[in-house]
Image 1 (cartoon, helix red, strand yellow):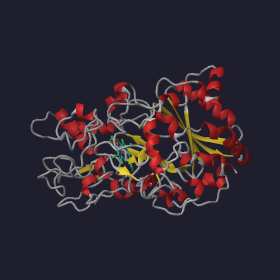
Image 2 (cartoon, helix red, strand yellow):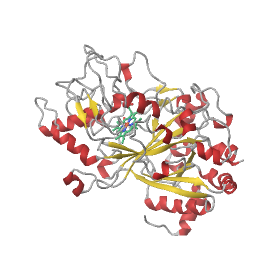
Image 3 (cartoon, protein in one colour):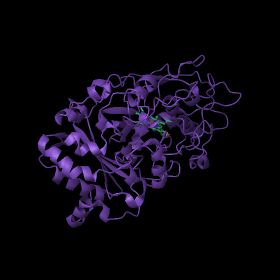
Image 4 (cartoon, protein in one colour):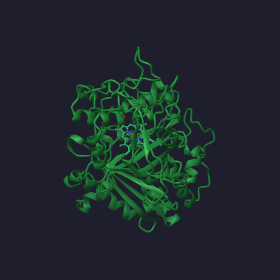
Length: 488
Ligand code: HEM
């Protein structure tokens, strides 16, 4: 990474408000919904009494992000630094909403259960998955054991994670250096993962090439829903807020959120090969178009982001770029039977498995997450593309926020994506696995519905295109707790 002169870096870190930003640290492709303005969010928060200055601001997709996973080696020193140096630099939700309020580099911090134990915070947050840690969940999540896991995620070694976000490597690097200097002797760096938005016209797309970050729930008290966007009570995402499913939370945890982190490696050349070798032979389509259609039906959206429910045979880039239309669908259509019709969108498509919409009789507001991940790793090299074999790791640094991991990330992965029977109640067909993220402990995965001409045809996927490298569950505490109970 490029280095900035230390005098500048001290200024940046020492006083974030000195420098007024002119460009955002968040990416802003047309397909992704805009964040509310500061004024809109303030007006909305009045009705829901959300304290946006106390909620950490790790929202949506950034240009560059760095995850520093650490263990605490000196509890007393760490608490002192947390209270005196770190807390004031943690970025609030309010700050991220307008470019001029954004710091040069945004900082967020979250702790695992072993981290709370290391800080001697005995209070239970009453989330079973969080208490157990992610390693204990590896089988539940469909991983074939932990042999593929990054070593740092094993044995509850990780106590916390710093999330640094900015728009240039130089900014990130200089902030990281300052953070390291401040925390010297207090922490041990266990693992560093560097994420970056993909370059040029791929900005906002994940490594398979599909636009990401389109469909998120709208949180009451924060943003106004766009057409098709679900409005959910704040307690589905934020602990201690209205309609938090768990009633017993310590008061200090209010406004915090559980962060489920997963390092998901993506086998891009292998995925592309699968599409090339299995074009959907639909009348009127070339083989190339048939391959693109297969990919779109596996995801439920075209690479542009246009939903196949509204654009079933050909991509529609104009629809994709319009956030007032690109999420406005339910999978239900007059004259078509939602229990059997897969002409538009397979039951197994990634976005249908993880958010079934009108497949449920009533709106499901319980199993919702806010996704805030970022791609990591290099672009596919010409040699990899030519050989159809991945030689350099790349993927998604997946981040999901929710007030209950058991209702959120864990549920979506286990009960929906990995469950061949889901979506249940469909006539004459078992949907099979989510072809993108469904995991069967490394075994072959059967997926149905992908062929619109013969939806009962099963595809037996021998390769996992997404491979878990492990992760951890964290609690992104409200900012007040960083100088309160966590530093006491
Ligand atoms: C490498 C792994 C993954 C890839 C490549 C991927 C890709 C995508 C893409 C392209 C979309 C559509 C764009 C959008 O609406 O934002 C999407 C949506 C979504 N994904 Fe993933 N995803 C991955 C992992 C996960 C995981 C692990 C989960 C949860 C267990 C998940 C849950 C969701 C949800 C809830 C949506 C929105 C569905 C909707 O509201 O329509 N994804 N993903």
